[in-house]
Image (cartoon, rainbow, N blue to C red; front, side, top):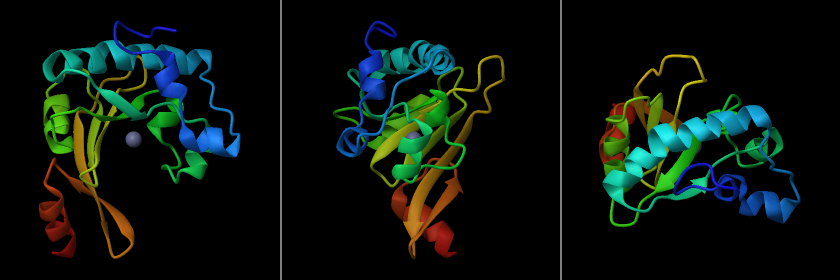
Length: 158
Ligand SMILES: [Zn+2]
C-alpha cells in the first residue's frame, strides 16, 4: 500500500527484530493517518532535496518498541517517526536538511548513524526541536542541537 508517491506502508511495518521474534507490527487506523502526514509533510519534501531515502525503523508496535529499547513514549509507536538514511549524505547532513522543513516536530542525530525525524500529533503545532544522541559511559545523552558526535560527547563530558 502506497502512503505517498515514494513511500509504502510495508517499509514502515518491516522489522527484522519483529520478524525474528514473531512480534506483530501492523499499523492501526490512527497510526496510518500519522504516517500519511509524516510521508507527505516531511519525507517527500526531504526526498526532493536528497534523493532516495531508506527507512531503517518506521512504525513500532509497543511490544517491538520495548524489544528494541525505544523510549517509553516513542513517537515510533504513534506512526509519527522514522529513522532514515540517505545514500551520499551523512546522517548529520540529513538532519540539517530535515530541520529546515516546515512541519518538523523533532530531529535527532542518533549516534552518527541515522536521522530520527518526527511530526507532531495531528492538530498539534510542531516544536522544531533538534538533539544529538550520544552514548557516554554506557548511558545515552540527548544534547541540544545538531552536532558532530565528537562535539556532543565533549559537551556531555564537560
Ligand atoms: Zn527513531
